[in-house]
Length: 80
Image 1 (cartoon, rainbow, N blue to C red):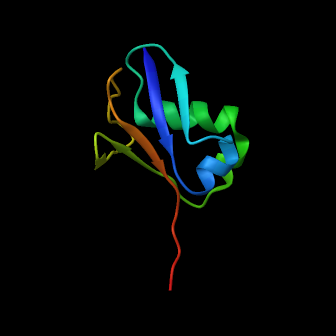
Image 2: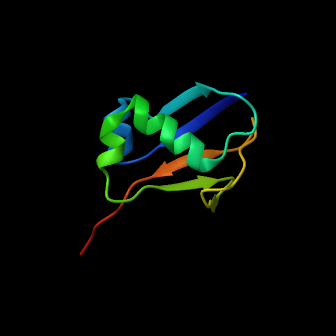
């Protein structure tokens, strides 16, 4: 399946673009996706936390991904 992932904040800087297209086998979970992305982009693994949204809802590690899902990587945010 082909996944399109929107990147925000530091994740955009690490990958070097605002979206990432990834072709992967069917049946991938959020946890599998993060493991694959951390392998391709080791700096993602250094982030203190990284949330994943699927279809505008925060996803758990076991959330299954499908080809037409809207996926976003949301880095930790700080503010004052």
